Image (cartoon, rainbow over all chains, first blue to last red):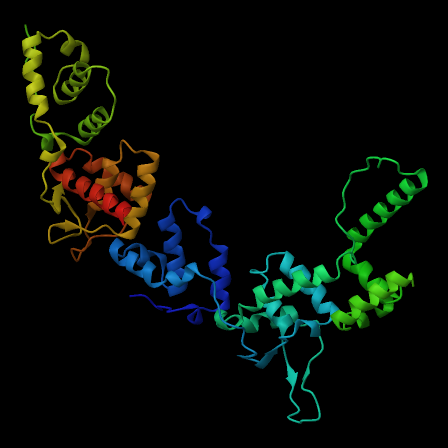
Length: 258
Length: 179
């Protein structure tokens, strides 16, 4: 009767997971209507077949698929097999390049579920395996293939990769705490006088505020431009620098006024 | 000449419209019992409110006694699963004298109960009773047009046929809420 009966998140693909997240109960008049669409999606069965089920059978199915109310929970696989061959997880996010980090910022802050496959193509890379105790295995450099590779993740089980998301979000939060202030704090439009502030101090404060606003406006472009010693031709090269090195370098330049 | 009073004395003989009016009366708060009976009698008889209010008190009391026998628990319990109207056969999915609603039927009925809680019986009957195909199987057409088409044909049915489906639906939602 149903084309598929997934038993856990293991049996659902990344594509299905993205589609599931695009469905919200607000789009439907009743909770049942919403559940019918969910069931249709995960069982790969037409909506009309689900709708013609006896209600009691439908309730049984909902119980069977109650795992949908949880989130996939298993450490992300260190390697996955795609139609183009194996890809390996950069599990230590400190190894990411500044270019990859900036792109991740964009995709995470603009709906990470819809961007999930692109995000995964940043984390999962090809790897040169030397099989030598003397030489480290090497991940390929970050490149311009993220959109191109996204489709390789369509049919991968969501359970294999999902946990990268909470893990990375935690990393990101701690990272920004560590480098707090480097990218400019929040801009407030409060220009009130501070009691006892001299005219020179006030002028300096307003200038700094204007500078901070500019920093926010130009954000990562300015960050890369400064890292590239204001040489636009070197920006591409700079995006390949390790994330930690890039932030440390910029901290140093800012502190020393270089 | 005095008007002859015609009364429906069995709840199963009420039409959808009359039954829904009664349900509304039962759920309404009246200041006096007399007002409530006047409304009930106006539904089950051929008298209008003015005529009832002008009745002799003994005549009115007789009608109240009859009205008291009109009770929801007297609704027919036996599910009639096949009817014929104007040469067209309509059937329902009754199994072992119980009606099992499908997901689609419940979805439609849930919306109806929210949007028109006091007049959904014509829709209910047009949802559960459907035409049959050439193999004698119930068709699945629950489109708004099909429901509307069937409502026109089936809205004259009496509560004898509609009642058991109304009770099945009531029981369904009672059990659903309990679970």
